Length: 62
Image 1 (tube, one colour):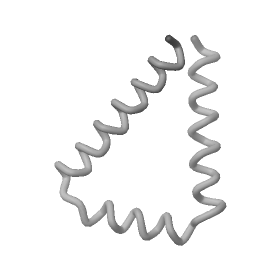
Image 2 (tube, helix red, strand yellow):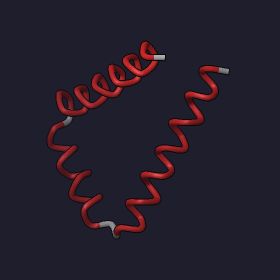
Image 3 (cartoon, helix red, strand yellow):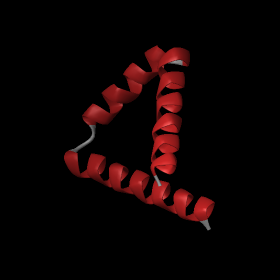
Image 4 (cartoon, helix red, strand yellow):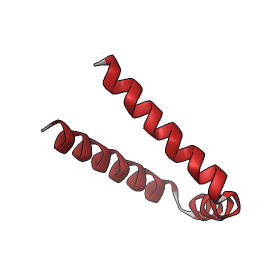
């Protein structure tokens, strides 16, 4: 179980690092767009991301 957690954290770090390394100016634009969204829209996006993540883990572990 701890191996799976470390793998997940490592993959998240890789993805975030790639975004920062390859498109730092685009990241700023995306963050500004997110800032303009209302709290409910941000919450919905977060819940959809969690749902997608859980679904992907469920499929991978299946």
